[in-house]
Amino acid sequence: MQNGFAFQSGKEDRRNQQTSDDIGAIFHSVFNVELATSAEEINEVFGIRYQVYCIDRPFEDPNCFLDKKEHDAYDARSAHALIRHRRTGHGIATVRLIMAGDTPDQSDFPMEGPCVPRMSLRAREAIANARRSEIAEISRMSVSREFRRRLNEKDSISGASDGACYSDSESGKRAVPYISLGLFTAILQMSVKHGITHWMAVMEPAQLRLLKRFGVEFDHLGPVLEYHGLRRPAFTEAASLIDRIKKRRPDVWSLITDEGRFLPEKPGND
Image (tube, rainbow, N blue to C red; front, side, top):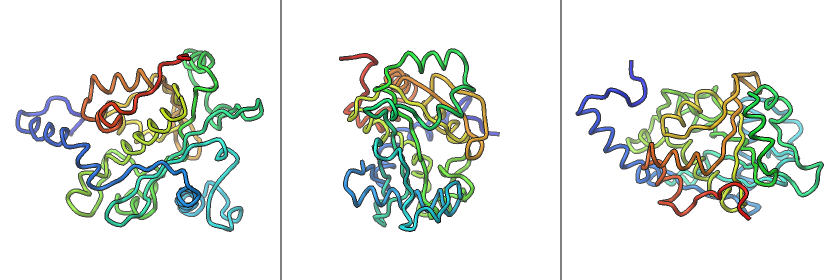
């Protein structure tokens, strides 16, 4: 049984090294990362979310969104991003970054009430000690129905599992496990733009395992709990996470930081 990257034969190691070196080229040959800033792009984001969260996995009531665009009160203080499939031009994945608002009644994050109390005391202290204005919640990370079908992952919102495989061209098959890295690239770009230094999230265990394979490992993980399906709450300081990726997987670091162009601020920098 294959488990991670340990104990590979010399031949397998060389093959994996070649693939590792090509991560950025493979990803960018198939997908584009776009920050959604125009009304048209944000409507595209909401359309993907409607398909995923109201139709495919009805966590939200579709009757509440007659325009077929899923949105909520947190979107007004969120940044949004898309992964676009180059060949078709379709938006195929999306993520948002929820930030604290300017008023006390807009300082909460969706996962705080149901998830953070279940995390360790150390994790809760780390969250409490971070500046509120520098925390963001990674949210609505999802892959469109078309791509989840091609991944044979119709039951996974994020399209991430340990064996996801895209049934299209060879470059597509090679690139699909990197969709999560593309979303993480977008998260980093939005964070740099808005001065975010800490991330919290509730993620599918399979997605966390996939990210860990690529060197993306959060400082604090809570227990698996029921939160729109089985999820694990997570919290991390962004800069230290990016530094660890550089040491463990410099190829992944090059992709998500655009060769060091996008690096998060250290906490508390004025």
